[in-house]
Image 1 (cartoon, rainbow, N blue to C red):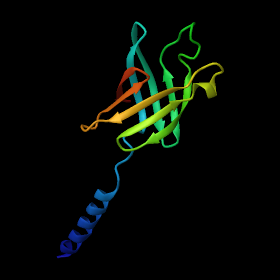
Image 2 (image 1 turned 90 degrees about the vertical axis):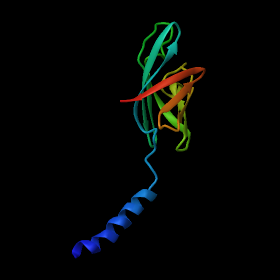
Image 3 (image 1 turned 180 degrees about the vertical axis):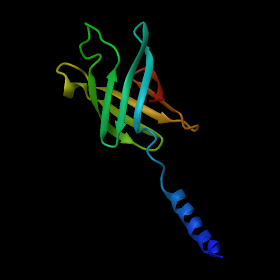
Image 4 (image 1 turned 60 degrees about the vertical axis):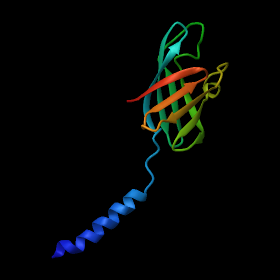
Length: 124
């Protein structure tokens, strides 16, 4: 008979949990890959509630900014889209900032763009 009293509590807890918004789907550690100048490129992207970092996994003598870790700022965020600013200029003199836009598809997958490059993202 005591179980009958638990049923309303279980149902109430389940309903409350259903009303809680899902966690931000963009937060976490990601591997981003794209087609760069004559080859595939990749980067590690870490997104937190307050920002994060981007590090392209490559080096080039002609481009000292390549391969450096850039802090990111979140320009705008919604459950379907997040706009990030890669703040290279704040970390390295002479480096230019870049914009990254990530979108959540209806199937829950994450896609993105950096400039004209399409990003493929996988969670690490």
